Length: 135
Image (cartoon, rainbow, N blue to C red):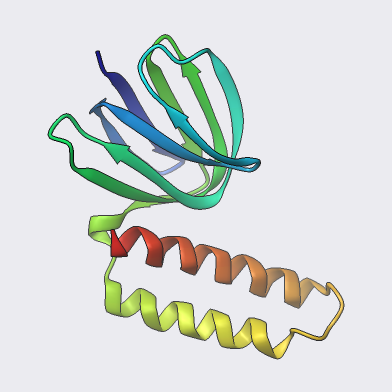
């Protein structure tokens, strides 16, 4: 048995294939999905979706928040943005992550201003892309 996984962003279909297992970064923690999983809908945070293919290899997809629905061995993930880990330039994202980290560190002692919240989100997105590119 397998699952059909579709990862859809507003501008493109990021992933559409049969897989053996999916690990979703929900807003309440990681959710493992195997064939026969109960139907559900969950919010997706900024993080890395992991996919185990039939050959046993794992792929990673950086997700930028959205929702996932599991229904009859079909997993549909609707996100604001997503990128396959294998398509992410590791050196470029390392620089982006360092820049986001430095900006966030400068705002460390401040209250939750709009700038700090934006810096936290930029850091989370860069970290998700970096993690997806490393796997």
